[in-house]
Length: 113
Length: 113
Image 1 (cartoon, helix red, strand yellow):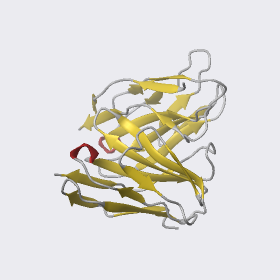
Image 2 (spheres, rainbow over the protein chains, first blue to last red):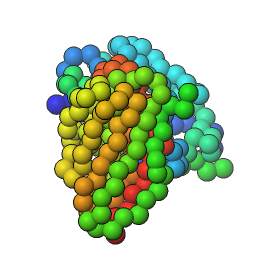
Image 3 (cartoon, each protein chain N blue to C red):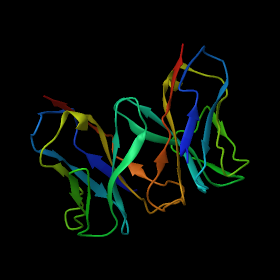
């Protein structure tokens, strides 16, 4: 079945460092891809999305490009801030009934000043 | 719009007790779902509904019941709480099953002693 694999955390960075969180997927068909963010004590919220190959999603300085040839959707940010500390989830719309999204296990990012 | 609301925010139960976690949305979304979030496990789908009167099981349905009598509400019932149900529970909704973005509630942190 469809699945999402993302890099294990935690990821610990200093403020202004470059961030990459790797995400790869296995899917039949042509899924849409998402990054969700969960700030401490809150629910998940959509960070960015891409609906077809070579699309780039972007929001709040974060970017991710839908790479069909490598089945990847890596999240990047050029200069992280302390306020970016959160858990990041990669997700896709599966080609199966019933499940709206399939999530990776999440990657915890901790940014220190 | 309030979005997706969940009550209570925190709950402590004793083994064997029953309770209902409430979830409501005011966006007229057809698809609603319940997830549990556990450390290292990511988000796991418990039950979902594609519309009023229609519910189905997700990945981890045992010990939980749901009903969907209205478009707005999707309560989750714990029949006889067990320590293994200690978790953070999230309700989510979306326009349709594979419509893309899911909107999440703030979560209920449940502890079963």
